[in-house]
Length: 266
Image 1 (cartoon, one colour):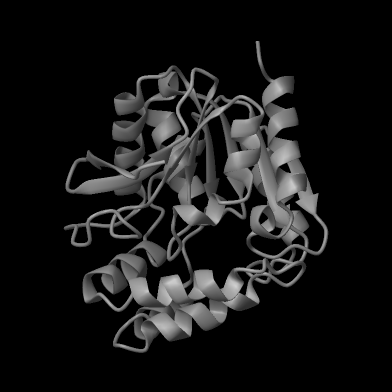
Image 2 (cartoon, one colour):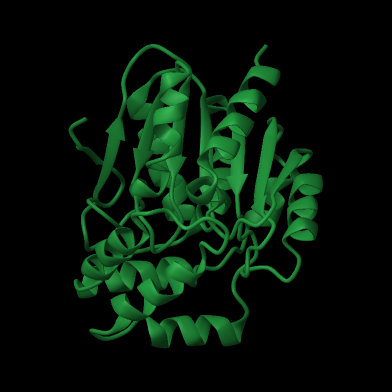
């Protein structure tokens, strides 16, 4: 596949597209990560007949580096632009960590573009003030990339992939650019004002996926149940997985998504 660039509201978004005429699946990574996050499950879903598109968030990966704003509403607007551009019918949107907030925001505003949602390791609440302050400090200066990569490695406690060091090094290299450091910093600490009322308007089949050993949450199972109850969705907890269950146990997560798509097809 050749990486493509799409003019969005305030810059260019990078995405890969497996093509084909199958059901459209669009995947958004978390803040501080890139579309390669889906390197293991995207081929599995494509092999099953889906047209899979993986996209970088604004300021991340191969998307343009310097954007005026970063946040949930802005990422939602980018997702809407991408779905309109693809023009392949309503999509299943898979989103991780920060990105589920943007996916839910977009689905509330433009429900006709969506057929279902898969929300992985969702952060639907803004980071508390102390954590935001820590992240803002951590994500400044030339050592930000190494600090972030060190944390990133810890978030795969169950079955770290063989290429984990390679992926961590790529994130370190990305954040050598001060514009991309700002993108990561501002996206990680983005507010969630206006999200709750939009979540209440979303009426789509939803699958919530959590890692049972995700250190981002005090009780990942309870967090996932709360999100599933709030969206009227189903919950799948992957035992032993951390913040990236689809990277550690791709066969389980890909199968869960495929089963969910089949069960909710009209």
